[in-house]
Image 1: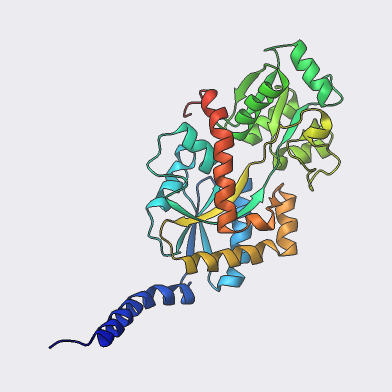
Image 2 (image 1 turned 180 degrees about the vertical axis):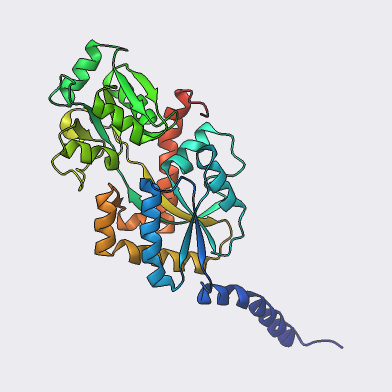
Length: 329
């Protein structure tokens, strides 16, 4: 039997629509069960704390809990890789960071693509780091510190959380811009490094705000500048590097949220809406600020904003990291 052309077209279009319905409905009804968010660092640090605060606020908008799972190892590549291999259904998410999404790809040979194997959801927070020194360093401001380091090449020591960490990479950039040379001392994290800065065992640090600001407020260390274009809300009395005499030394590790590749656009939009609503909550903003995390600009709280920002960070930092010859720790 010959089917009339119009009827055939109606059947074809109708069939395609029926195939699309489950995908559309999934986006509209999502989520129907708890969501797992992979955090590729140990529990208790700034990144983990920020992820937990955000996940708790997102529950209100989504109507489902977000369960944090810390999947650690190989500088975060194990956790990130798990998300890259997960089904794109919106029930496995990644809370990633500058270190896991930019640095690792320049240092490690990865089994996933940090851009193309993920769907961006939103840039969440940015944390400008600080130029700090032990109390006994003979410098009253950043210009004095640079002069002291230039007059004593290779004599000063700088604590880091290890090769490839923000303090290490930031220290390399600092040396390049200030024409100074000092020796790096790796630690198992920022906490023990800060302890040795306070006790005077090391001289300087490019330090995270969560570790540095409480010690600075207590008068145990010196802080000369924040590595950003604008002053930090957590330390508004500390000048920017532009104001202090080292323009262009910007180091602001950041956090963002991703889903696996091929997650439906409707699901991404639902998650993005929940993130934006959470980040607009005044109490959440205050709690994030207390741990040195500043809310990203509104235009960066979109999938497109995160993707563009991520790509720009790769273009900026990969040449610096690769030229330094940083190897996996």
